[in-house]
Length: 248
Image (tube, rainbow, N blue to C red; front, side, top):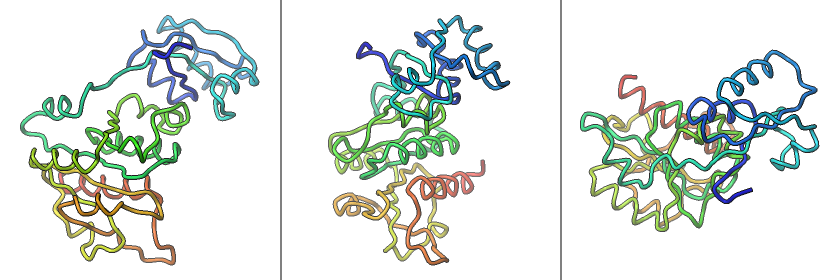
């Protein structure tokens, strides 16, 4: 496969690409033994997009995407660059719209990243940012878990996260980190202005330098026996509290 191509698998991930960038889909591989309504609807969309459809058995599909969770659908597609740079994205946001960003510090599990991208898309976040040396890139598993959000939410991997946070501050974007040790609750914070929410990996939390770079730290109240939430769940809670305060 060309370095300019990527593998997508699962109904959601492939369907979103067919909807948003149909000409970028090079081939779609499907399991002919699956004849349910969902597959028929998917095939109608693929045919409407004019995509080449190749029938393949389950074993070949698993080999193509290195996963058994393909649901009978795998695609080869061109890599799409949603935005060339974070600066370009921020400059393109209208003057009457407060940026909403999600920064992930140390999230290396592709399932967690995929879920974070999915919740970021749902909450209308403008981008997700992560450090290159403490993060996972967009791969087939991330795209599958993201259910199409990897195709719609810009994901920027930056060389120096602390420096990027400093540049966001220069743009008057408020940086709020989530920490179990914070004395202020998420629900006491003002999230209505230009905002970047910073979350660390489950267990390790924010790295010390990242924590020091934040303008403020907040906690998510934990009322039960467990001490922390999965990072994608925590991201959803924080992002949707910002959405609630901004008034949908």
